[in-house]
Length: 285
Image (cartoon, rainbow, N blue to C red):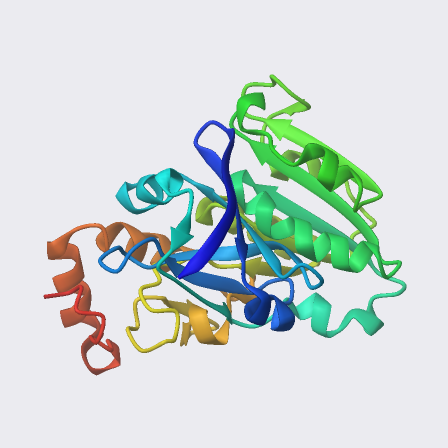
């Protein structure tokens, strides 16, 4: 069992979960994720690491209630059945931080993706790297972590679809005139990452995205997290979650997400992918 320190509502079905996880935190780095289960019979929920304290051993996760599993999680105040991680690879920028001293890094956060942006920006900012953040949300009711973000970057630009806070419009509107970007990192909805990647490709800017496909076990065994990158099949939970945004087949990724929502869709994918479809997830039967 994993002890919950706090599990509180931030805004509009967005929660902050803090748990005791000393062994996990000891090896955690920005960009990685965890898989958790609320109880023995619950689904596994993948959540990107938001923050960690190596002294206290506390791990912080941000999640949004979007289905039965996360609704169940929001009601739990004492313990989790299991917590596995850190999983996936650390951020490419964290691994190559010494090469970024003269670079300008732009982070693009969409919706709940901002929770994953924060630890990377914080890590780079603390090491003297120039970091800017553009954060887009539906409206001001969905803006979270504004104060924390301002503390880890030189510039924070907010955008909302309805103009209720910051610039009215989408994040790509704020990228077009930027001439100082060396590397762009986008985390958020698939369609947002697709649009950002298309734009930065035109602008000749290196693009990194953190993909959020269906994940069942977090180990690559089930094959549910497969994505197409540079014409090759990759498994996001073990080969990602970060990839070159200019090489990702976003259309296939978004279609797969939709198909995976239905039993017929899962069966279709099983037939379509043949021997490359792992099948151990037991979700396609």
